[in-house]
Length: 493
Ligand code: URA
Image (cartoon, rainbow, N blue to C red):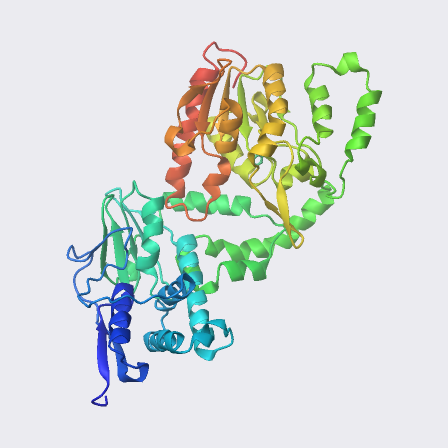
């Protein structure tokens, strides 16, 4: 190293605080980029060394004694630096310091999107953001005998500590650790601690919960919509070794063509079969009103014609509730999904399949219940040919509340289960924090007891730490309805 070159040693390869402090110091002392040599200290210490705590709010807490004179950079540049500095490329700190130096010396650089340094830094920042996103999506926790959870993961960049606050927020009540070859983080319910890297063998193996998750994954796989290129883009092969469901992808894709062929032979709903409101209104006009009035069938036809909010125009059809008038228990979901919209029946798509598994586990025959939704039409947005679910807003929920209320009046259930926040709000007339009150009975103004719990789609989240425990907890919530709904030995299951 030439004598005039100054070495800057960072405490770790994700030492953002140290990098920031060093940049400020170097700029203040007018040290040009070519006179700086950047290095990172090697990691040391035992697993989850108590001497290296990191708070969830400030994951890059590497103490630095360097002075920090003011250095003002636009927020977008700071964001770029913070992400690109976590890239695996050994030359990143030199590149980023050069970029800062040039941004200060060449004001025109801010308006030059084609500058080579800037392009390279932006490419690095993009790769790091993608890696953080993949970490959030693909970390799979497995239970340990002491009740805590651990996951093995191999990030592409130095992103673990920057991503850890996400897991702290999401799994604040659990004790967990994420082990990677480079470093590890552990949350004990109060503090996040950092330690050195681990081996894959240090992480626990498959468990019963995972087998349940695999069963779900196989169950919800939609053979009519396999998109291998998209799947590989979203779930790149390098993450497969850590994902239990990856073992199912090849056989499921293989079987998809055959399964979807069978579905076509069986004949499905025609997605183009949109029914204009006017023709339905005509149909209504022709119906003998007295015979239809006050029945679920009349309600169904009236719902079809509803254009009280815009989503009805873009759906295939309204999806009415299903079940017997007089059913003791009414289950209320959010809105029909893609499959429900095509088939005109509630809970027949992936979320419906999860619900069906719960009903099977509880021994509740579906036809003894009344299944319906807070919103009657499928709210979605088009992404190419795909229709992506959009959560209904208050506008749609309010416009639809008349149908749910009429349905309750006609079915006269003894209790209702609100599956998720939209259903809870529609039933109770106020916003409800589902995770805070799940498993509890609340009461509507008209006296109807409402049990609040998760929506089945929440059980399909790819980042659930322990899908088996999640499902068991959900069954527990749902099971509380059995006694209340059928206390008088009525006609429930
Ligand atoms: N999700 C719902 O909330 N309802 C359905 O009918 C299907 C999916």
